[in-house]
Image (cartoon, rainbow, N blue to C red; front, side, top):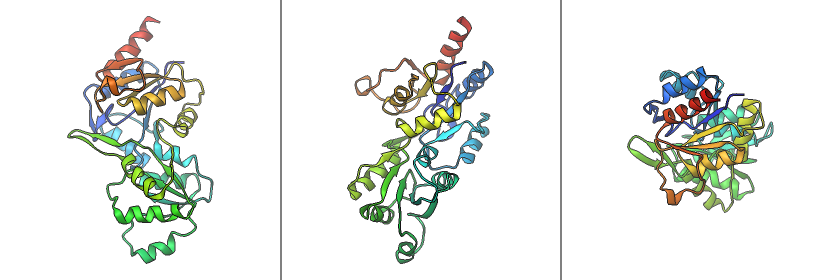
Length: 271
């Protein structure tokens, strides 16, 4: 089997949907050589179709090849489970796909009294990045947690890379809700087990020792590589962590995805 490439999106393929130099061609070259490229992202806000369309817009076909932290989080739900969403439409889509019930979203523009009537008997509060996060939304999310609902975070990334620099990520929102709720959240996305389960299901293989995880953050992508037993290729095109801050030693350090592709394809040619 040719080595699967587990590829982060933000900071590896693109920055705010603007392709990083060489990434589109790198993915095409890897696929032409027979490598499965799977996009493994902690982005839970957008629906899968939206992410596939964004990749198609930069000439990367991706139908069936996008694994999101929202999908990973949905693996933790049971059919019929009642969920309050503090996040985007990608979370709503993933919850409904597994047969759980979205009771409400915390950012709905309805009076608090009407919201309270709907948001009853909540089993789980699921949190991900959403730009509409505010104090009212936090209050709505925390109330059922204080009443015994469990808290699931799609990811705990504290920041998110953009062309203009880092901005607060979904993990920052999750931290506020968890602190106010007095609970420790269950995390689904990289580098945690539910995302590993999702990737293995999508690839149809359990042994990922030959795979590469291409990511820009060792604490997320590197730790995930170690979790699933893959090799970790650290990309320098996204979040910059100093060597002193790194907790996972990469198996290779690359300027960008194109450089990783050169290494993988070179090894394949020499095999």
